[in-house]
Amino acid sequence: MRKTRVGILGCANIAEKYAIAAFRSLPQVELVAIGSRKKAKAEEWAARHRLEAETYDSLIARKDIDIMYSPLPVGLQEEWTLKAAAAGKHVVCEKSITYSLQSAERMVDAFKKNGLALYENFVPEFHPQHAQVLALINKQKIGIPHVWNGAYGFPPFPKGDIRFRAELRGGALNDCGCYTVFMARKIMQQEPVAVTCALSNDEAEVDVKGSALLEFENGEALMSFGFDHLYQNTYSVWGSKGMVRTNRAFAVPPSMAPTVELITNDGREEKCDMIDVPAANQFALSFDFFCKAVATNERGQFEDMYERILHQASVLEAMRVSARERRRVEL
Image (tube, rainbow, N blue to C red; front, side, top):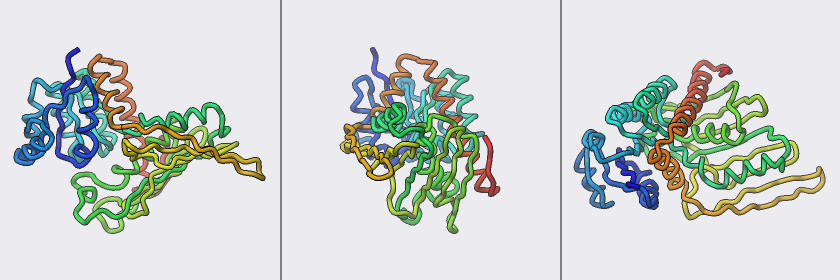
């Protein structure tokens, strides 16, 4: 089988820190080139990582590349992803894939029309710790799951960081809050029926912190996120008979072996079982899933990718409306 050939659309930190090595770990994938708005920057990165240098336009125009990996800022994803679709390229985008439900719908429609795969790269999806959490829930180790509770936030970023630029659609919800929404939906195994959200700008151009309540038919999710916090990267699920808790949930380095904590008590004595989870490269697992779907032209998986994008975008849109209009929003 011919190797699936990949180009990177943009010289972003996440590409250098995780994505390049992850793609290169996959035997049926060939990482070919990297593009930048400025060719000189692409040439610098290409020399450092043994790649070919391109501009955004020339990278998309190449006939020998099957997949574009886009780590671009949220506000640039739609423009360049639509150009990639017009050129017949499959695309995997870093989260958040875009800034509004309407934008997500335009992107999905373009890829559907062209029979191409479009994927929002929430890499925690594939880390084995979440399968372990779901297994405990499905085996009723915590009884009925009532409340998902998660937090993802960072200490302040340097002044001028792109996350604070309104024209690039930065902000805490699009950058880290989206992870809590994604994981709450995954672990509760439902879509929310209503949301209530508060976002704060603290005189910045974008939201720098927020919190939300997601209501499900069975249970709820509470979440907080932001850019001026003690570092937090975890969630728990509180059930009728126990609780399951992660120690590192969303950003997990490939060398880290996380633990899952199962807590139960009978009202008098608490029992805590620590379950070891093997280390995993969640970027490599996510890319492997996407590249295999493309290589085998799994149209059913393409459709599932579209639906997942739209479900996530619908919840984020409802959260923005809730925060702006200061009200509960039903989905």
